[in-house]
Image 1 (spheres, rainbow, N blue to C red):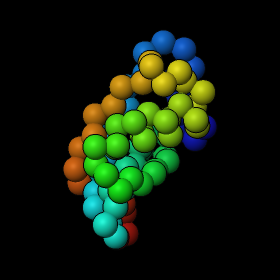
Image 2 (image 1 turned 90 degrees about the horizontal axis):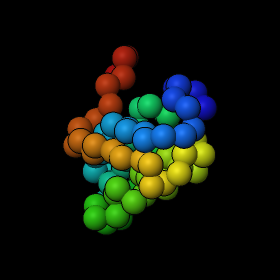
Image 3 (image 1 turned 45 degrees about the vertical axis):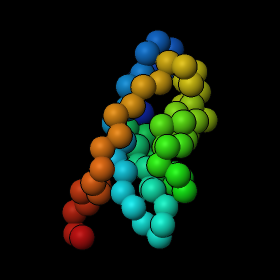
Length: 77
């Protein structure tokens, strides 16, 4: 996975950036350069854990995340 440098076993912590767009909450995980959206913010943590598990092969139970409101910084924008 681009941007994911950890082994696929053990405890894994990810930072997540979230923002509102088109009545949905967009969740971006910079560590694996992937995103997902949810309609209900209460589903955000589960959605992010599922995304990370699907893309990295890490067990969902070993994933923790900090979700911060904001937008990812991009050069040229």
